Length: 273
Image: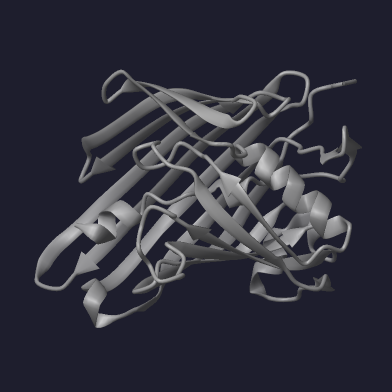
């Protein structure tokens, strides 16, 4: 059913960071952290069949340019559908991205009602003019896709462009989501930086009085005929250090929000690169 497949969505845009921003080799230096978000249904059209949705998202980020970056991500939702029993989806993702941004390893597991329904494992590498994909699960396969970025570098570029005052750009992203067989085109809009003061601010600790940029990222699957409409869109507020909050994930016929309820900033490993 479509609703359960789209809940396994791209989170490349939500690479989070913590602590003061620094720059190395022209990219933002990300700092380890753990962020927890409460999820709930924002709106749903009748065509979606959704009558209720709640959940929680946990994202943990570690590493540096010297040793590479790892992420551990879990996204659990409880979905109520018309004339159907409630179902629980549990998406678990682990990734590694090299500090140079040219190699990427991913493991994605999807559980529905505690039963494993999909597992995708593989590696990706950026070559001169392509993204080379090598899968080991669900079966061994190799595929060449167009040149792209991986999630951490995608986030580093977003921060750098926001700091530089850019408001619009486009790029290509591969994050290993779904069947790990496509590159998504992304269109990024960055709004004006301003101080945020709302209920979520109390959970931001030392960042509570810092400015945020409103960011909107639209994801397009160029293999689908969508008449120019994105497959989905993610809106969020981003701090200068890369921490994001006040999420809205819009899939067209339904959308959900994610509010940050807990943020832990970890010490960054030393890196002189």
